[in-house]
Picture 1: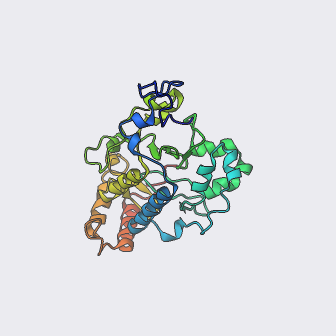
Picture 2: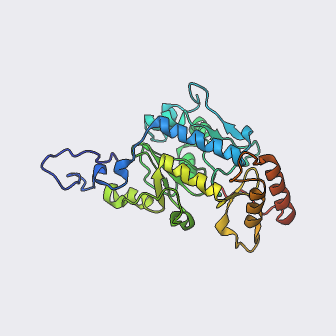
Length: 293
């Protein structure tokens, strides 16, 4: 579906598309101020991964695209998935976090791993379209051609390359309704501007512009609402009442603060901090923190 961005009928001053009855994007409160830019989207991803590297992410796990982009990601491979040329051009130039040889993942949000599209684009002809969509889109359908899934299994996050919006489909209430967020979620009702079968997943969780989404995620890490319990796994602080790991997340928060995060970044000791975190977690909660994927 293409959204009704501009008014095509001068006689229609309702602000709605005469064919679909949907509210034009130009008439929405928040989406009318949001737009898509490939360059800005790539920059937002790069900035976010640099931030994660500063906090906990092992530099060896970051995959940086060559100057001409990932050769594995082609227009043809993405067409097999029913995606647009723009989706292919974007994914071709994004950085990714790689999976280890034993298949172990690295969280890039709380309990969430971003998909490595160099891997999926390369293997879609072997594993099949449904297998790839099963990991990046299901059970939410339909996902239109200009929207791409950013996550691998688990909680789904979609990027709309027409609107320039990131949809955090199953966004936890602890995030969505936090009054202190640096950017509030988009308030426009998807049932007003999108077809009903798409509006369901668009309105399920929370949505932000691309840059704002990543700024909110960075804020959650700075506030230690997202808590790295190792160099690979990230927990959610609001789950600290888990009877199997009581107080674990609060312990990790204290360790990060002791090592300077985030108020004294000039002296933040990343390696020493993570060494202590992993040592304490393994001693007190051996084998309890595994990837939720």
